[in-house]
Length: 409
Image 1: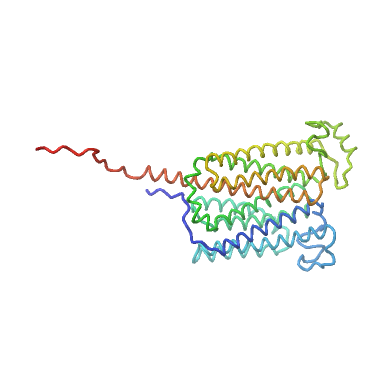
Image 2: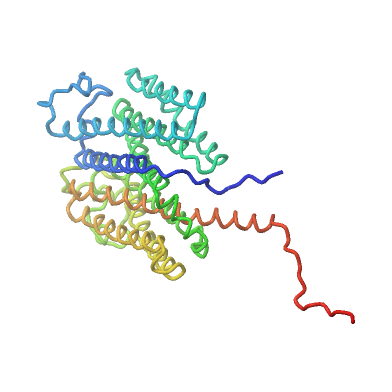
C-alpha cells in the first residue's frame, strides 16, 4: 500500500487571487476597528432592531439618521455586509479554481443558496445558519486533513465563519445577551487571522520560497509558537469579556490595583469601590468577579510578554537573523510591547474610546502574526516528517567494497 503524502502539493501562483485575499484581510481589519469603536462608545444597542435599522432596510436607512451611536453601529453593519460579500467571492474563487464538473457546480450552488438565505429576514433561518456553520467548519477541517494543500476548504471555512459572525452580531441585538457579544468579538479576531492565513497560502512566497526554510527551522521548538499564540487568544477572550460587561474599568489604576499589588475582592470592598467610582461611561456596578478578570488579564499580559520575548530570542539564536521566523517574532514582540502600553494607557485615560479601539486593533494584529508564525513553523515540521518517512521507505543502498579486492595471480 502506498503511503499517503502529507506534504502540500504545489499549485500555480495566482497573483490576483492573492491580492483579493489581502483585500479580504484588510477589509476584515477595518471591520474590527469599526466594531471596536462601537464597543468603546457603548453604541452596540444604538440600533435596537436587526437585520433592519429602525424598520428600514439597512441599505436604505436615511443618511440624516446617521448620528451619535447610530453612526457607529449602522456603519458597522454595512461594513460587515461588505466583508461578507467579499468573503463569499473569495470562497467561490477558491472553489472554482480547484474543482471541475459536478463538484464545481454543487459547491457554487451551495454557496449561493446559503448566501441568499442571509436575506431571508426570518429569525429561525438565521439561527439555523448559525447552528450549521460550525458543522461546516468541522467538515472542512476534516476534508483538509485528507486533501493536503487544498485551498478551497479554507475558503469554505471562511465563508461559514463570516456567516456565523454576522448572525451572532444580529442575535446579540435581538436577544440582548452580552455573552453573545463576547463570542462575536472573539470570532472577529479569529476570522481576521483566518483571512491572513489564506493570504499567506495564496502568496508567491509561500508556494515558491517558504520551502527553503523548512528543514532549517526544525531546530525551533514546535510547541513554542502555537502555545504562545493560544495564550494570546485566551488573553483576547479575557479582554472581550471585560469589554462586553459594560461596567467600565473594574480597576481604575495601574500598575497597582486600588493602591495594592492585589486588590481585595470581598463584597464590602467591592461596595466601597463602586461608591468611589467617578467614571461616566460605566453602565453597571462592578463585581468581585470583574476585578478578578482584570487581574487575570494583567497577569496573562505579563506572561505573554515573557513568552514572546523568549520566542524572539530563541528564533534569533537557533535560526539566525535572516530567517522569516526571526523577523516575525521580533515584529511580534514589538506589537506586544505596544499592546501593553496601550492597555496601560486605556486605564490612565479612563478608557478613552480611541485608545481602547487601538488596543483591540493591535491585539488582532498580534494574534494574526502569531498564527502566521505558527503556520511557518509547522510547515517545517510537516516536511521534516515527510523526509523522515521517505528515508525510511527508501531501499538500502548497495554496499561497495572500500578497498579493491586482491587479484589472484
